[in-house]
Length: 233
Image (cartoon, rainbow, N blue to C red; front, top):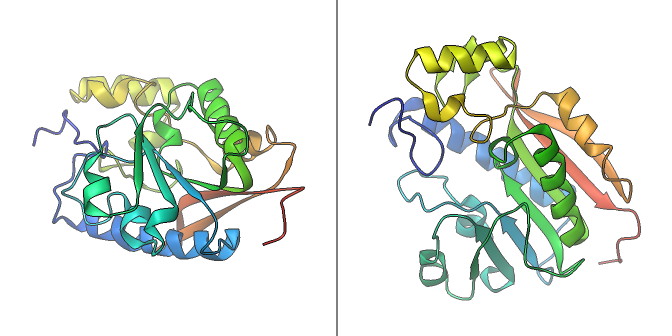
């Protein structure tokens, strides 16, 4: 695979590579945090925003793979991931954008989204995405994103370059021939400070920003939002 052409996971790493195995390990940890921090129960309806058509990575669509109550899950994404309905009987798939979801307010008890918010474009779009997830949620929202200040950038598998100012980073990616990732609409990395700013746009929720670490360094950021008037489980 050319380094300039990502797969449906917005990644250039080979499926059996060390970065992909490490990412799967981290996703296991984030999934455990999701179950714990949101306190989801078996009767809750769950919307997973941003599923992918990729079937080569071990942890692609991990909620669909690991969550036991398949009939309570609706998967949404811009890719055609309709195979999920056959792979996991009882699950529903809807092809749509997370920026404009075809649901009424509070349609699902819990909304989950893993490593999507960095791919929706500008900071304004990232706020819009978080607000749209919050609009849909009756009880809680759980969002994950790579930490911009981790030494290796997960999508390009390049070290340190993403620590440059964002305009410089994108210019450098174009020099390396990675034009897809050089576009803000495809990759806009977030720091914990920016995540906290996004959290402030959700006034109807108790919101926390936390992380999971890899080698002692925060690798992924987690936004957990619990609706203030959430119904008792």
